[in-house]
Amino acid sequence: MSLELVQNMIKIPEDVQLSLVGNQITVTGVKGKITRDFAHTKVKITNNSEGIHLQAASARKLDAALVGTVTAQIGNMIKGVTKGYTYKMKIVFVHFPMSIKIIGKKVHIENFIGERKARITNIIGDTKVSIKQEDVILEGIDKDDVGQTAGNIHQCTKVHNKDLRKFLDGIYVYSRE
Image (cartoon, rainbow, N blue to C red; front, side):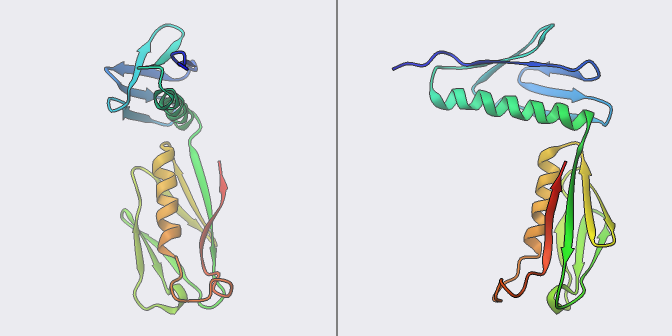
């Protein structure tokens, strides 16, 4: 049984400029500019007056799935440069009051479950991190960078060798916009 070649079309909003050089796409909007290279994919990308046209290299299932993945990533780029992404994280502590500081491109989490040494994690890309009382707010135009930064902060506050039902201390994502 053979599949048909999968094709997809993405319409570009009027307030977004998109340029295509080879398989490298640059999306520019109100909030900024994102560049991503899709040369490693087996997807043929063309730009015409209607928008971006994506076509699978062959009729295989994996290539068809790849068209959907690239379509979603380009859609995320367009949303990022127009609206941006915001992740909100809640600082939760029961046993020891922890404090968070932003120093350069790193997040320092101090006094986590009574530890004397601060736990340190990286801020990825151009993500802006701000702290408001018990909330950590991550904002940026690249969904991958904002999500990875949130994941790094959450992973940094993972509790080891304790009963997780009792030690709920950590920093958790509660809102994605």
